[in-house]
Image (tube, rainbow, N blue to C red):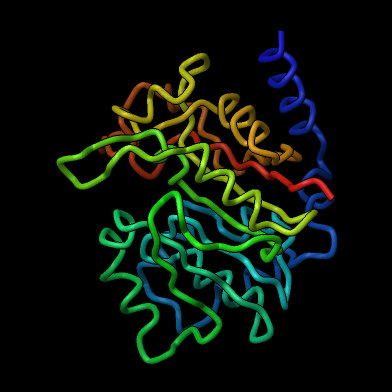
Amino acid sequence: MRRHLIASCIASCLALSSLAGCATMGGASPSDIAAVLASPSRSAADRERDARDKPAEVLALGGFKRGDTVADLLAGAGYYSEILSGIVGPTGKVLLVNNPGYDGFGKKGYTERLAGNRLPNVTHVVGPSDALGLGTDVLDGAVIVMSYHDLYWVDEKQGWQKVDAGRFLDQIAAALKPGGALVVVDHSAKDGTGSAAAQDLHRIEEQFAIADFRAHGLQWEAAIPVLRNPADDRSKNVFDPAIRGKTDRFVHLYRKPR
């Protein structure tokens, strides 16, 4: 019954044409973010990624604005960190946050991105998954893009130890200010699979995610269908050439209660 109610809630919200506008009142609009994306200082690779990831729409959902402090969690090379840098402006701050696994994966990318103090309002933070040192009530917002499922993935041969997902999520909830927003994007798994598909397919069930974040003090507030792909049957690994870059992805907004 609970699962059915959550699904019904999502469907109802997606039917509201004003959903994204309501969620982002007071924040940067898609057109504002588009201006950031148009910066000639951005790399060709990032511009190519824009077309498939639609960051203007995704980040508008969070309502982030100039002067905010926002964390890009498990940021890898920092693609979203750079865009957020432009959104929050010189009076704002972005934390490019990695655990050791993600830091190794993204090192070449973020080294080039941050070279020469190119993004002076971006701070690179590295720490163990259960002790990132984010602080308490310090973030206006945060994003975790296509990496939430990795909290439930284990590959010791690649140096990815089992993560205490609950402690990781508790850190996010603690670090957000009351009313702070969290935007989550991830590859959708089949209904009823929970976190199991994270191991073999790098996917996670949408309804599991809602319940998971809620259990750690963050309330689901909205969703947008901008990265949905009904042609993805959600049976393939996200790195399969047949579906890579075209997976069905959910985009959620969560909020810490005031």
